[in-house]
Image (cartoon, rainbow, N blue to C red; front, side):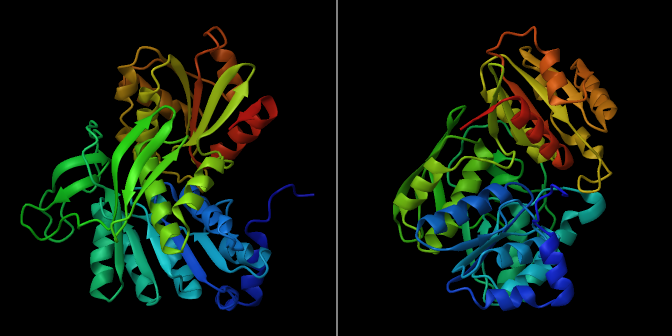
Length: 428
């Protein structure tokens, strides 16, 4: 047996036989579909939306494992008979194929950051692809992060072509220090440097062009009274019709506020009640390596994906918010699905880790030597190990109350998850 999940292969075969299979299956949906894309957070957001709609009594087709190109979408739709909804994560560049085939009710656009530059190219190329995809699906409404200038650049172009736009964002200053290397510093219209009243993280925040031709819009779904700590996140949502709802979850950081806000907005638009959505969060336990917790011999291990500068910076924020002494195992591979170009590690603010003397850092992966050099320039002494087990042995002398954070990019995530499942017990 191959011992691999069939998240894409059936779809590849089906599309080879019938290239219109996604369109044909989409016409059989009783309610329609939602597509989720964005650089960071789409798997978690997509799965929460699907679970909430499912909890409302619907049968939902969903590519929960994150197979987010056309074959994965086709396979997920074929595997769920008589589905009333499809909720599908989509790779940004694959939207040009997935959107005209599915014709979804909503495209949820979470954010845009530099990622996999040798495959995706620069962000303006990704923007052009998504605008083109929306133009090919005129039935689709864009549900977009209004705090992200890059995503709003897409919304601006799409709206000019007639795409309805609904926005979400955080409506208050969280008082957080901005990332050292911000993205999207310049106006999407005239190129002037943007002014921020405040930023939540990376380039997301209350932005405006000094020339007055581009700014954060009046938000439709707004998060306020935001609380973020080691135990999770909580905030209040105000909907476009003035309704308010309290949302809380036992996982995540500031970036998760955006993910949960987007998931709530999409679920709300799909008819999910506030009570059902909160119950979904209460019952939701990550199973895909994103913020999964394990117990290995009495030591807590937290596994999370960190695949680009923004993802790593947000994980560093999570580490710093954890006021316990701790260890971190950082893993970067350069396999095909990671991208061969790892120069982005120099845009990660590892220097913030150096300010916390209680953090013990080890590194690994096929580019462990590059990471070790990067740590040296951040004034961090980091030894190289070749597995999670080796990292645990390396910190064995540390007291058991020291948690280990395992932060990996794509191809290292599943091996680390499998290793942790073999060695320890999962903690919800």
